[in-house]
Image (cartoon, one colour):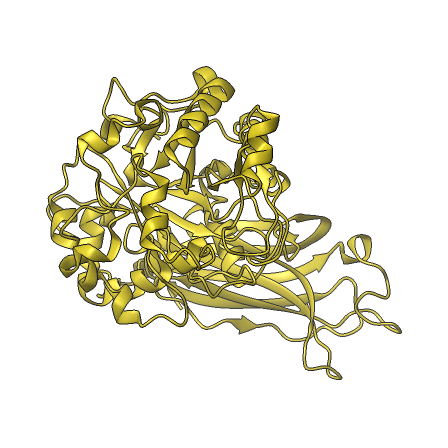
Amino acid sequence: MTAPLAHYFMYTGHNSYLTGNQFSSKSSVRPIKKALQNGVRVIELDLWPARNIKSAVLHGGNNDVEVRHGGTLTTSVKLLKCLRAIKEFAFQVSEYPVVITFEDHLTADLQEKVAKMVTKTFGGMLYSPEIDGLEKLSPESLKKKILISTKPPREYLETQNRNSPHKSEKTSEEQGDDGKLCSSRTNLFSCSFMCFANQDQIDEGEQLQEEDEEMKIPEYRDLIAIPAGKPKGGLEEWLRMDAKQVRRLSLCEQELEEATITYGKDIVRITKNHLLRVYPKGSRLDSSNYDPFVGWKHGTQMVAFNMQGYGKHLWIMQGMFRANGGCGYVKKPDFLLREKDDFDPSVPLPVYKILKVKIYSGEGWHLDFRHTHFDQCSPPDFLVKVGVAGVHASKARRTKIVRNSWLPEWNEEFKFEVAGPELSVLRIEVIDFDKYSKHDDFGGQTCLPISELRNGIRAVPLHDRGGVKYKSARLLVRFDLKDPQDCSE
């Protein structure tokens, strides 16, 4: 954990304060606490003036800055509550640094208030970027530190003046983290990397601010450990950025997908020194997620996920960050960090390992589920799905169905070729087969980082849809991970 911060994948949340969907759910400190307790190291807060700013000012205190998803029906939560929750839970599970990304929609006077609020709340926990350059600092040297990442300060009203006064606020996804429209309705070409290289005017708000502009709110500017922004000139300017002045760059998932078609190797080169954050597109109002491996294989450190829901991609994310003791930081593979030879993500990786997985049996469901949960009249009919998710995923395989048993035995083995084990996750899911329904019943799942699998017979605990470990349900599994030349049929 002594390499530079940019050499690690970071467990990253998106709109970390929302309790459910992106349009109408409540904002609360509860999901922030839960994320930190699960090892998430990057928390996102959207800062807005209080909806009733006059009342907030009248009552004084720190009530005039809210955290909410702008332009939606979501409720708001006071910024101070969020900061206090982060302070309390930041290092309960992991001692490694927490990064708070602010999406800032504030006026200069409110930015000044936020600066005082943050400084007073975190005190000595707050990292002050004044001595050593961030490029030299590692997760180890930043233990129990909180880092702020946002754009250099600017006037909130400048953004408002660029919009029609009759238009409502746009959501952060509609505007994009970089202030652009980015949704399922967007022309993908307008979100492409080519636009970044040729059209400075697309995103004036995220361009690097001139020094005199930054000096308007020096207290706020001095908080920023990781400046966020997009240099004028787009990609070419990105590549010329000083490696000693670490910056955070942001793309929505559509922008990244478009960019990787032409600029894959360039993105890998940028992420050797600078931080790249990728976040869900605006049409994911249900808090669904996307394929994280697109970002990871291009060196993206912050693949931001909606932690509020469940599903295959979130399970993969949770599995990836079970590596390294669940501390929220996972070292990038060496091939993404080579100095003289940039990795080309479009070229298939060779097979590095052969993984054999034998599913013996399972137990514990009768203790974690009601006896009538799977079937009103009989025990469940369990089968297991096994597959490898990664830069080159394999097709999922299935065991036979063991009918009418709470203690199923399968004794079946599967073999997988693994390319890039550091970027591969073993997926295991148990389902109860229902021949009378279109949908089988869920019986538990787990995702395991292949690079950390230990050979031998293991009791593998299962998790629910949200990633919470069941008390009793588990599988008996044998893992055999070897180099291809060591495998004999």
